[in-house]
Every structure is written in structure tokens, then in C-alpha cells.
Amino acid sequence: MTHPVLERVVKTARHTSFYLSCGDETATPIIFVHGWPELSISWRHQLPAMAALGLRAIAPDMRGYGRSSVYSRHEDYRLEESTADMIELLDHLGAEKAIWVGHDWGTPVVWSIAQQHPDRVHGVAGLCVPYIPDGFAVETIAPLVDRRIYPEAQFPVGQWDYQMFYRENFPAAVAAFEANIRGFVRAAFRAGSEAGKGQPAMTAFTRAAGGWFGGGAAPDFPRDETVLTLEDENRYVAALEANGFFGPDSWYMNGDANRAYAKRVEDQWRLEMPVLFLHGAYDYVCETIDSDLARPMRDYCANLSETVVESGHWMAQEKPVHVNAALAKWLSAQLPELWPRP
Picture 1 (cartoon, rainbow, N blue to C red):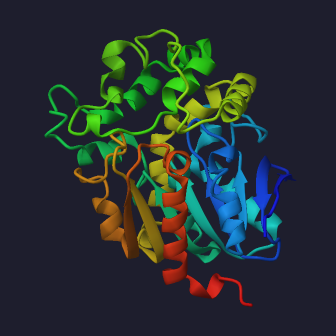
Picture 2 (picture 1 turned 120 degrees about the vertical axis):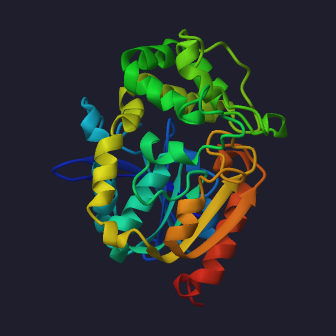
């Protein structure tokens, strides 16, 4: 049975979330949370697949993106706020718990939900960005950098240098991305490659270069058809042109607040529910295979499953069949009681 992907909106006194919905509305929700600089459509390959398995697949536009609320202050993009958005969405769906799946900045959101609201979680899955129990910030992840690739004297914060550039040069970062949004989308959404293994990621040179593209606009790359169709590209471009990059980039400006948020529930840092993590074999910014970036997750998850996907960072769009298969295998092994009965 093929389920249509429907467009929905939930409005509360504090926030509006646009979301995509696919599947039986009485089924267990599986909520997919996108990262920077994406949209609900980043999960276009997962929604019908999970609905076909009998789940209610949901993917919101996160705050600052698409048709959800956009805010004008950096502090409006704290993890505490986006976590509250997702709990409001879950309440709106009429469910006590969900399976949560996150990618990129969506993973700190789902990790925060598991940490702050474990009673609202059946299980949690992260793509590319592992669980950092004391909060995802340069201060917590820089000590985990692979110093064989990033000698500290040359790369004090390793591949996370671009996040420091945002902190120090926020208006310039936003202006550069907005100068050629279609070029940026084509430059960013590209498949992974073995060629970059063992080499410093481009993001390690951001401050020295004066920005992602040397301080100017993105060049005009060809679109990578293995990741985006023209229709996909047009939807990303339209959303980013409508809202700009202030909101998306502001997610990087709340390191202290996000660490303080995690600190409030230090006694809940250990996650007891089933956890799945998907490593990107060719993701050299969120490099989790040879570095120590995944070590805190392994120390603080009681029931952790791990799978390596032969992809770059945009895993769900580059290798959707592999991602869907990994999710289905994990769900059948760890949460079989949530699968529909005949």
C-alpha cells in the first residue's frame, strides 16, 4: 500500500511547526528531525518507506526553516527551544512517545529529547553526529579531534573551525551564503568520496580563508544528481531565499546555553532506551570512525547499535536504501512491539 505524503501545520502560543506526514495516523510515530541547512523534504526517501512498514512517519521543518516559525535572535535557536517544539509536535500528534531520528543539527535535538524527556521516547537514532552527553558545542567536541590529521598548533579546534568563524564573523558568514544560494545548495549537497579520507576537511580552514568560499559567494557548481534532483534543489533554494541564513546559522551560536541545558539533567545523561547510530564512512567533518567523536556516546548509551553507511554527510539523501534498511533492522530487533499486528 502506498501512503501519500501530506502537508500539515501545528500552531501553539509559542511556535508554529510545518510538517510532512505519511502513514496511518493511529500508528506509532517516527519523527525525523533535519539539520543545517535542510528541510522536512530531506527525509523524502524515508517517509514512505517507514509508512509502508506500518509506522506514522513525520518530518517537520525546524525553527528558522521552511514554513515553520522564523525568529530574529540567536537565543531563539537554543536546543531547549527546538526540543520544546518537538514535544509540542508530539502532543499535537496525540502520542505519548515516538521513535526519534535526527541528522546533523537534528541529532542534538533528538539526543536532547532522549536526555531531557526520556518518558517521550521509544528509541532514538542519530545520523552522522553522535550523542555528546554534556552538550554539542565546540568546547565539548574539540577535545575529541583526531590530532593525527589536525595538529593542534595548526588546527586548534580541528574541523570545527567553521563554527568559530560563525561566532566571530556571523554577519559575513550569513552574507556569503545568501550571495548565491543556488550555488551554495549545489556546492553543499554532494555525495561522499573515499578521496578525502585522512585529509583535513575544508571546514578546518574557514577562518584562515575568510569564509567557506574565501569570503565570497559560492561558485556555480553543477548539481550532484546522486543527491538532489532539480525539483529537490528548487525547493531548498526557494526556502533559503525566503528565510535567509540568519536562523540556520544561529543554531551554531548557542554553545554555552546548550551545555547549560544538558548540565541541568546530568543525572539523565546515560540513555537507557534503544539507540542507533549511523556512521558516514565518507563524512570527514563529522568523522566518527577513526576519531574519538563517538566515544562519549559509547560510554553513555546502555543499548547502542552502530552501522557504517558508505556515504558522505547527506546520508539519508545519498544512500536512502541503506539508511532505511538500517532503521528497519534496528526497529525489528530492538522495538518489535511497536510494529503493527495483523
